Image 1 (cartoon, rainbow, N blue to C red):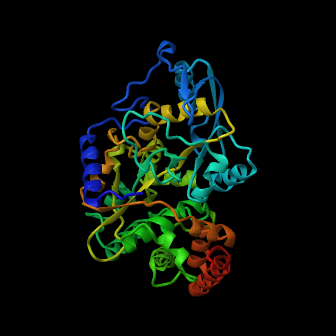
Image 2: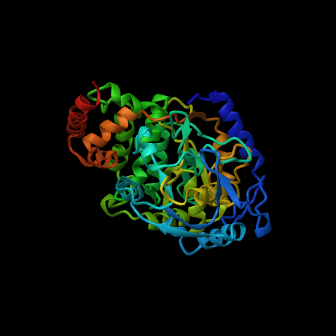
Length: 440
C-alpha cells in the first residue's frame, strides 16, 4: 500500500477533528455527518452485483459475529431495526463472543463462521481467498481509509470498521486532585505524574494486565512510537532474534515493567477487570489508560462527564516531541460461502449509515466523514507526527503462527520475570526455529 505523506495525513485528521469540536458526542447518534440513512423500504436497494458483475437479490438472514458484547440487546437492536427497514427482505442477527481473535480464528479455520466477521492481524493476506469474498464491488459514497491493508492480488477482502490513534486517556479531575497542572510531555514527566496520582490515592495507570488484549498497545503502538515506523512487526521476518532489550519491543515493555516495579499500575495486576476499569477511570479512581480513542466514549458511558475526560499523546521518550500511530480497528470481512449479497449490503450500511464510528469514538473509515469525538482536538493540539499502519508481511505472520507465539503473554512474562532477558531468549528461540521452515 502506498503510504500517504505523514504531513498530509496529520493535516487531514486535524482538520476534520477541529471541524467537529462542537459536535455531538452522544453514543446514540444514528447517522453520519454526510450520509442520510434511508428508513423507507421504497428507498431500499433491492439487488447488488457480485464480483463477476452478476445481480444478486438482497434477502435472507445475515449473522454478524462481533466482539462488542456490550452492544448486544442494546445498540444492536436499533441497528437491526433500521437495517431491516431499509432491506425488508433481510433479517440480521448479532452474535457476540469474548476473546474474539482466538475464537474467531478457530471458527474461520473450520470454515464454519457467520456471514460477516471481523478480522485482525493474525491471518495471512494470502489466505483471504480461502475464506472471504472480495469486497471491491461495494460502492461507497467516498474514498475509504486502509483499503489496501487487507488485500491480496489486487482484491480487497477487508474494510476497516473504524480507525484510531493511541495515547493517554485521562481523568482531568484525578489530575487536578493529584496536583498535575499540565499533561506530561516527556517520559520522565509521565513517571512523575503517575507518582503524584499514586500519592493522591489514585491508581495511576489502568493496565488491564490480566485481560491481555489491552496490552496490544505495548506490542504494536509504543514500538511504533519508539522507532518512528510501523513496520517493526514485519521486520521480525528478517531476524532470528527480533525481540531485544535495546530494540523497540524492549523499550516498550521496559516502560510497563518500570510502571509495575514502581507500583504505578493496579494493586494486583493478576486480577484486573476490564469492565470495572472503565468505571474506575470514569470515577477518577484510576487516572489513566494507554489505549485508543475508541475507549473514550466507553468511559463516558460509565458515568464520566465528557469534559472531564482528556486525551494526549504518550511521551515514549524524553525528546519532548510526540509520535502517534494511525491504525484501523477490526476489519469487516464476508464469508464467501455465506449470504454474500446481503452481507455486503450490511457492511456498506455499517460504514455509511449505522453511526457506529460515532458510538465507538472512531476516526471514520469514510474520508469525508468528520469524527465527532472532541477529545481528538486536544490530542491534535500537541502536534503529534502520525505514523500510518502499513500492510502486513505474510512471512512474519506465518512465522508467528508456526511458533505459536502469543505476544500478549510474552509481555506479561517480561513484566513479571526477575530475568526479562531470559524471556526474550525463550521467545527468540521459538521464533528462530519456526523461521527455518518459513524462510527458504
